[in-house]
Amino acid sequence: MHVVILAEFAAASGGAEKVAVESARGLAEAGARVSFIQAVDGPVDGLLDHPGVRRVPLNLPDVWSLPAWRGAVTGIWNGEAARRLTAALDALPEPVDALHLHQWSRAFSPAVLPVLLAQPAPLVLTLHDYFLACPNGVYYRFDEAEPCALRPMSAACLAAPCDPKSRLHKAVRVGRAAALRVAAGAAPLDVIHVCDASRSRMAAMLAGRRLRHHRIDNPVRVAPDAPAEPERGDAVAYVGRLTAEKGADLVAEAARRSGLPALFIGAGPLDDSLRAQGAEVIGWRSPAEVAAILWARARAVCAPSRWYETGPLTIYEALAQGIPAIASNRSGAAEKVRHGETGLVVEPEAGALAEVFRVLKDDAVVARLGRAAHAAYWQAPPTLAAHAGALLDLYRRLAEETAERRSGRNGNFNDGTTVAAMR
Image: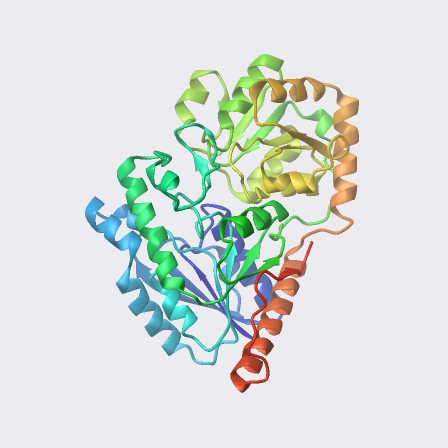
């Protein structure tokens, strides 16, 4: 099977790119032939160095690197991206059996959708966020520091000053969302969700659209090993971008109130304020370094997202190592945490987190949670091989249905069907 993976970057700067790259590698290891189409020039993850992976760079600019007016226009509709993608697909040396799009907000733009929908192979979109429905992509009111409750693209949505940057940026994002609806048209779309909560929310947001929903976990690349000993750790760890919507400030405040230190691995707009509070912020580290730091120092890993985060991988990676996880009750990661058994699920609020941090001062509690987390995770781990197998099953099924529709044997598209390809 020949699969085309489309992502805007070829190295992880966020969860979507990480999953795209790892999926490509997993599919190649499973015997598929993979063409990885990379929109923006830049670093390339070593995972793509595999004989089964062909990397196809389009050398497009990141819209954020362009002058404001040009970035705005290009972000809404990048005709050059459509032209380069068409040429790249035409130049592939063998027929394509499936197309899989992971991102489109930084270079591809909605302009690539008509190109992909015109291909004879089925198209699948993984929804790492809410861009298919919500203009700012995270269904979150940055002006109110709360999840959004408005219907996407309604009059109230258009008027809301919810963008993290400015009203002008909101206007551009609204333009892109409108262009996306035009680009998709009435075409049926197969979409993959990485958590049950996202699937439920997106189904409601996109009611009336011809969508078929599929559920596949993100892969987690952690090798089986003996569980960590988190009771020996000295801090609660936060891994990721240091932003308010991800709750980095909540971790710092809870640490101050509880007297249990917090360790921040990552960078972002809250860098300076966290350091000013005396927090330990060590910046970005490689995946291997992060794993080693967590193994040595983490009593727990905390991801207290204020937004409806679909699936923070750091929670899964912590559970895999036998480190208790503290997950926001608004995030998809909460579905993987057994409250009071393998970790704790809490409201993203400083007082609630502080109470949890105080509980984690007890070595016996931390040890119990950590051992249970490790045992539960490895009963059915979402490995790279399992992820690739679920994708291949889905691609084959969709390819067969596409062939049947073309032959006239089956002209139906079952709207709203949920396929639990992998749990």
